[in-house]
Length: 191
Image (cartoon, rainbow, N blue to C red; front, side, top):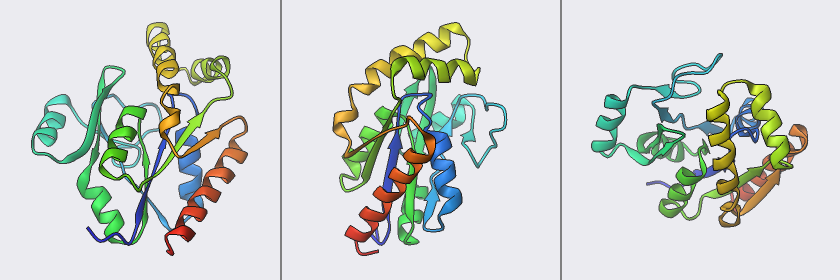
């Protein structure tokens, strides 16, 4: 693989704001390309197939997994998610910074395969604020919400494995901090 580009992995517990952050960063920068993950979950309101995720059924996901098309895959909140190898390879070969928005376990797997990837863990200011954000989002029932909060507590224990930790207390500052990290890493790699 031509290492002209590099990978930026952004992860966070559900509801921490990573999707809002990465979308804003992508809209402001031409040096980034987004790796669209595959999932078996249903689209949320406003999400588009091929833009936010590739929404597929479980048999299709299993076929891709069995053919070795995913660099990583995981079952999260009862649904499958996977990162396609070809997207990452094409992005890097095109000299782009490949931005990945993936769950914590997927991010750890990416770092095993690409130890030089830039790893960013976004944390909420508090668990209480995270719960408020999830409730405001209104996309889960009470049981799903409890599961996401339990998973969030467990996922926060893994932040120590990431190079950068960004607290998302104010979205604007979190975006600025992540862009500075990307620019710093880009300079370090002479891109």
